[in-house]
Image 1: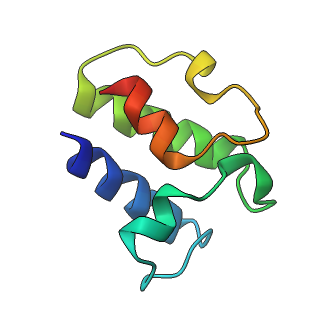
Image 2 (image 1 turned 120 degrees about the vertical axis):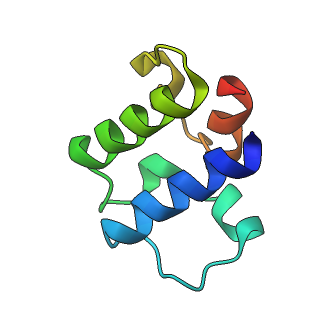
Length: 80
């Protein structure tokens, strides 16, 4: 499940040109979503929508609280 969620987040971030295609999973997990100026509400809503369909849970914005060290890994761990 975690790998599927990670691949979805990676796909969304690549499609929105937030990250490059050749990023390694370890690097992606350490990315702080809120430190990247390319991440806007549209990107977050795309991520939330995909995560809801995969995890079959309602995802609220509490998962994405703006924190200094809110990494992709921490978000995945909260959801799975």
